[in-house]
Length: 356
Image (cartoon, rainbow, N blue to C red; front, side, top):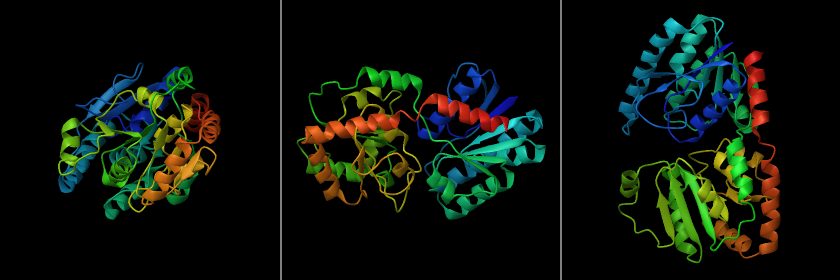
């Protein structure tokens, strides 16, 4: 078996991290694995051992019109590359719906085409309809990251749900720091530097709760951070960090982790940072809809609250961080829930789908 994996933008966000885990699992099982992704930047997909790396051109642009042109140009170039190397017996694994050029060529070549769908929120609507339309036409099988997403975006293909999981390295590291004594109460959020991810709500929470330290880790450069907050005076108890290759230290010192996505603009289909927090025994607060409700249970390992309800979120933060007995129980429940999401489950399920 030869697997050809395709991804568009290599960075330190969730979808390339999941693909990295898949690639490592397949090479561990001695499956010949090739990766096609954009060149010119570092990310989770860089320098993975035993993976044959290939690159195609793509550049992310802030301007939506330019970004659309660059996307279609990149997929034309990718399609030309794949046209000459794909064989009918190959398994083509398309990570997200964005690399649609791969889906088209895979279908025309008669390959088994597997799409791994991570999200449902996408704009403009016409682009989403086009990308998911290509997926519906070309996919032999589809992998979803949650039951919620599978219900939201059903394609005319065999449907599989494989939850995102924790790296074994991450689990081992988290176990070393469980029950670690903490000198201060830190509220953590890790996300993209976007308003719909709840960045502005996180700032407001910091302003409302000066007795806690708030740490925001964003997938952005320091210049992008400075530009985003240029017209705002940040509270002294809030620290904003640029892109981090390793977030372990932030979880080690945190007391709680938040996800404040605006459900009107962005629905979380899983929430990998929430799962990582749970491995450290950290209670979480997440939106009441989407894939996150499949891992967070109200009042057991966290709370389900709409991000616009800042007062209630603040109230729950204070309630939990000032009640040690309840906090410790929720911490234990969070840790216990995280144990299901292990690499063995992930590798076995993904290999089964490749072999079907």
